[in-house]
Amino acid sequence: MTKFRSLAFAALVAPLALGLAACDSTEGDDVAEAEVIAPIDAPEGSEWIDVTSVSEYDGYILGNPDAPIKLVEYASLTCPACAAFAAQGSEELKTKFVNSGRVSYELRNQIHGPHDLALATMVRCGEKEAFHPLSDQVWANLNGLITPIIENQDAVQAAFGLAPDQRMVKIAEIGGYYDFFAARGLSADQARQCLANEETYSAIAERSTQQSQEFGVEGTPTFFLNGKKIDSNSWDSIKVLIEKAGAR
Image 1: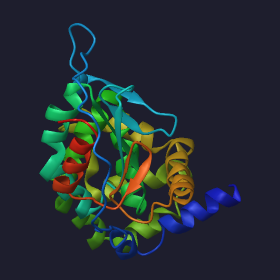
Image 2 (image 1 turned 45 degrees about the vertical axis):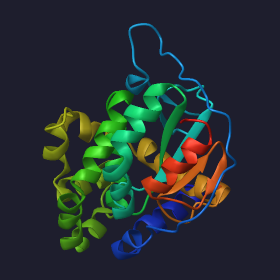
Image 3 (image 1 turned 60 degrees about the vertical axis):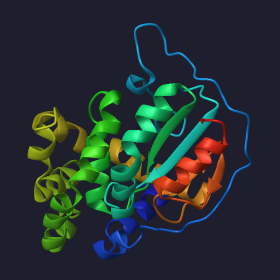
């Protein structure tokens, strides 16, 4: 295990309360008002809301990858503030703005603990088009997915004493994640295969650490609009910034 990977795992086995406390909720920023951008047609026979691609940062881009307005969110799947943003703004962001072709929405995982890493691995396990819907489903059911982890912290910590190919498999079992994802199209066998791949889940953790350091992401959700980090993180404030950038 490399030194960098060792540091990544040291963060993952920290007390779960610290991971949950990593959510942030600062407000306030602005962008210059731009000219209105005309809607951009999707390829014939398709809609932008159905188009998903993977960025060079291993984020999942929903919509037109060449959209003139690019919204990037660093999010934790175990962060209540991220869940609140998804509940308040996900539908309008995707159906009104992303589907117009003017805005792309890229979601990148910031990892806040071993259960977060298991969830991030599972939402990435199937087809790339499933990533955003599964992430929204996790946030919509967050309390039920976090409660078993909080109630069994000793078992979660003990899972890191298992062989690398069993650590995430066990954590997902403790959290009851297999039944949750199976009900949403990801079989338990497929999920276990993904979770048993140390290279896969370690890479997710390492990217989280590297990119958080590189871009100054200190909490979630953190947003970037056209490459500029913004302080706002509620849907009402993000919507205003998107409209000022030309999607109105």
